Length: 330
Image 1 (tube, rainbow, N blue to C red):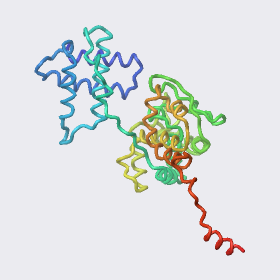
Image 2: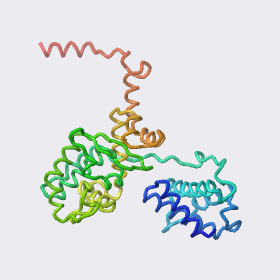
Image 3: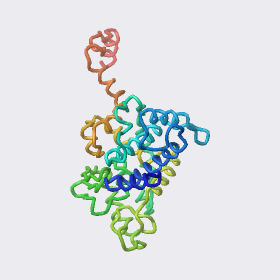
Image 4: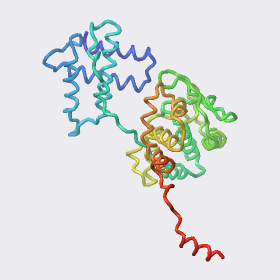
């Protein structure tokens, strides 16, 4: 099989399995990168002959690879390796190859766990409170980003929301076909609900005068021309608004708002299980990646309450100071 045929078959497989559009694009790009590498690989050019040694060689190539003078980050290399792993899983499952070269490989020893970042709470408050004014675009942006931060929805889930997916009366919203084509119900906080309600009453009807017939007519968030908002427009506006707060907008993305939602919830005592359900994670491992941020809070709790860590057993009363204070009160 040629590289073109392999990629086409793999793409159809991913679409049939319900992979998101962005995931299909990334896997297609990264498997093409691997197949291009394989075409110049001296030992073999045939995917049917690739074994664990070749995967190790490809991994070494990724470490040495330079793009615009810069190497690839740990998470980027890991992601590119996982794309190839998915490719060979597909080829093996459909019997295009006899043996999957990833079988028996200890992927955990390869992966470098990257700590998830988040936006400091004070910057989130400054950012959200700074979106004010009576212009319909300002009301829309405030409602959109309050909803993103208040629910932890993925940007694709925000883009795909329709008006009928929001139930303000019960404080819930329905995410239709989230990651893995799974539906879920997400609680809607009062603050986010208030801004969505204001947007629906004061702003969205004015976007509607430009609204065309078709699927965009039911979209919750619209552009000034009445079209469904896009990934690019949301990320672009997010960066611009954060620049105005003094926080580097280049470091901000829509997914960082999702990380911040999870981190701040855990920092304030939410259970991992509950955060997992809200985020729509399939397994606990995805959610546990946020828990390192709450360690500092947990350390304070241990120091305060553990009998071998706190200082409550020490005689803390300064009697001379206490006498002086009592005299002063008298």
